[in-house]
Image 1 (tube, rainbow, N blue to C red):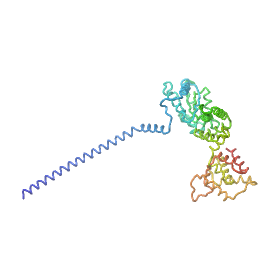
Image 2: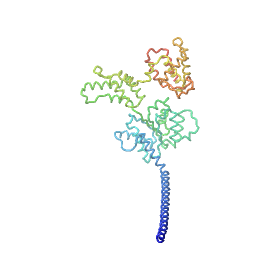
Image 3: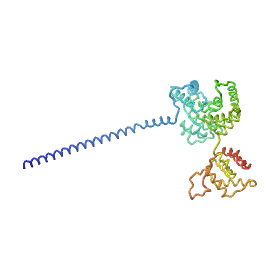
Length: 450
């Protein structure tokens, strides 16, 4: 009995010591794991820190590459096909500017996606790689969609030439003086040693529509004078006359050769017709998208029948009218004379206040001026009736409030904006049935205020 108790006691002590040893081992293993985890965590943080610090430039490059890809910016990599002659000609022209200080100008014309920007980018890439040219050419890139006025364009020229500090707070008497000052600041000695400037004008046709064409006039004037060597490269979508003939001409393998000849002669005659040229010119000013031209031609071809085998200028005019049909202008045809008068009053306010928002009270006052002048021919409606007509225009979404009206706001003084432009209004009035002559004259009179 005593022996068994002694054995049990020894076993208990040994078990306890073994347990302590196991606990100690487990504790040391746990501490080791914790230390290893802390070391890994610290290393991970150091790696993350190193990665973040080193990748700032890398991330910037990634964003640049992807943004260029998403924006479909033309790449200057690879080879050009089909425009090698234009490439050599443009390269030689820019070489004469950069190496010999010769001013030049060129216009690159072609439909969207035809490779105008790609051609120019390849030429500029070649120039920048030339040892004699590197660092000896300043580039200014303008876009008619962004630089919508000559004043905005001049600010962008100053920014790209990095001359903001040179200009400072100077006041110039004219656009020409300002531009001449900028180019004078770049001069170094005589014309041949001055740093040449390349102006790239994308959407060139939009710059032509600037008031007085001040930017173009001064740039081309400088390019012809003995000042800083300047080259102007314009990029624009080509006019539609040539495409018109290409798309409507029948191929040589057409089965009925005599009719094909007669058809093609007629297309040639149409391309020289003033009415057809005006139709295509109006479309070109409205949009440069070739799909619009194709749609117009498709509408015109729909008029061709056995009894009407050849296209006429009238067919193109009718197709143009269908192509430009405006749903809002159609709504105007169904309005009352009072509602037409309110739209004309809003048009007048837009002309006078340069498109600033208006309220019902301003429109009503303008309408009252007209009524007072034409009291013998126009019925004077009560103000609640005029307000009802105004609200109907609001429901038709021809007028839009600038802000969501609150319960406390007075309806007469809510700021509004007209969703019709002058052309839509005048076109709708021309076909409005039984429109009073005084109303038409009132609408036309505001044109002199533009």
